[in-house]
Length: 594
Image (cartoon, rainbow, N blue to C red; front, side, top):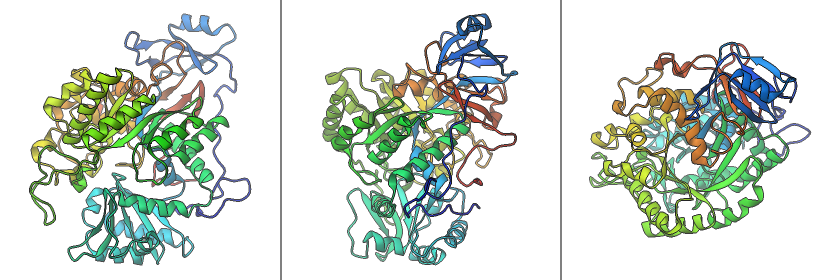
């Protein structure tokens, strides 16, 4: 296990980033020149419906001059262009992640204790104990991700006492694999101001045992209290966030990602992104999704945040979406379902159908106000009842405001059969999260909560694609998995099986996509869904030169080997921002860091 970085909580000093490590500089062009290039000697997949395969690319000024024949590319680039022979490697558009928490994932890489969702309670406690030895007595231990199967077991005060002992009295906050819930210790509860008689916050729970004693488990909005307490201890938040975003981008580029939609973007993160872009340090397109209601992170939300966001708009930063959370997650039975959950733990009613956070009429009014401001909306709706409420609200807004706003349903997990065609009819994007299917342990927890019939009909991607709906893939990193690896998600969309073989069988196998459809869900379709279809997501004349070079042809290899794909180079705006060293592994939380 890697050792903790120096604590981010004191103010940084000198010329280094927080923690003392220098920020990484984006790589320069492989040729050492910004002049025109012609790339050839490879199979080039464009993701363009009309011209999916071409022989060569001509690139200049950060944009694609031509995607076509070698003769066309040479003519467009001119006689002085450098010819780059890619020696048979596959070239594809840079991947677009439609649902990622870039800053949160970057924080884990830069600052936090790496916990894997497959770690046992004993393993987590051992990591906390080792990590704590390098910290000062009052330093926070912040980390994740704790698997849902572990969170299911943290229901007695004995686990709280074990966490207290492992931390040596230091405050601890660990995030779970849904990022909706937290595990904290007694010292953290004390700093949060939470005691035996503290009432639960709205839309949140301080989980107690059967005797009413605090367990240290926080559900939903109770997590915000912990996050706010941690944030208050960081003295230079801007520097902290810039370093985190740099680490997040480094990880994303190592997997071939060049465009992202931040799934929940608060003002401090917007400010850090803007600072990076104006300094020429932002090497990805970033579309922001700004919370419309109180969120798990503290800060301004709704109209106050929407109005503040415009000052941070820049070339690569686009604060274009509002973020709505309609329900929770099925692991804690907080997803809003049309039918009851499985019966029946001691504290659950046999008619328990979860919790809907938004009143349908209030949601319609809020969405109308949001689109009136020129914003689109990403709506978290994990239960089939929440999905129906979203579709009903979008239908109402479409009648009154037309077809311009974009709407995403995240995570398109459970959808009633009769609601499937409404995605295409209403032009609603299915923001899909194949990383949550496999090899995540989340499915093991969910299978114990929702009915077998509902579970077996989950993630209906085939039906959505066949209906004409846009399916766009997002990692939801750092939820579910310790990296934003798109190749794992791409394979899962095709095979519906666990890439690492850790879980037997297939999940709803008749909903599998073809390789071409899955690649589109990681390139062309999310770019279109984010409002970036006119600048990236395809390799075509006039679009940004955002592309990747990979070590195997995912269109011809055995689909079971897609997850083994390695990105050799990632290019953003005509410049390489990642070049893999020999035997280098992509960046993931829990991996050794230099």
